[in-house]
Length: 149
Ligand code: RB5
Image 1 (cartoon, rainbow, N blue to C red):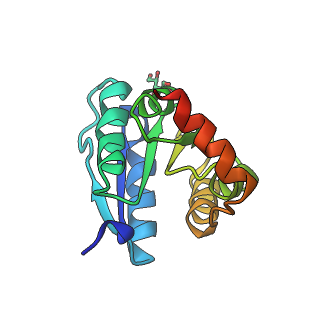
Image 2: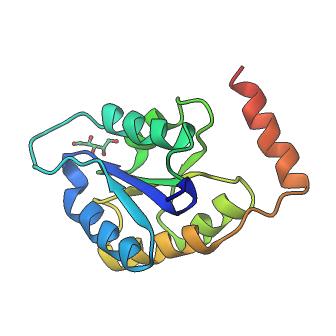
């Protein structure tokens, strides 16, 4: 098993149901799902779940991460604090495709209180099937990396 087929999923309490639906969806596509929870609905702070998923992507253990909270925003902000992470919140399929093609995003964040399950599944598919285009976009991604110090 290599990192190339491993995908980590993580959420706070606001998004457990959506996370589990996405887990089943991507597993059915052949991804090895590393679902790091939480499993139960007690209130839990999104930064620690964003960080935990981001560390698995940044270390190379997982190729991609998909993270969830109520809006997708807070957990995205936490994940992006980890060096090497490029995570975007998406509520549409165009953005999900573009953050792969132009920004070489390695994580996707979804808001369970923003998008319904059907749209979320389409967003995930758009993200996972798009390829980074490189070229001038690679130069810009390098500029983002340079900001990390
Ligand atoms: C939890 O109530 C909520 O604040 C969280 O899920 C997320 O939306 C934060 O960005």
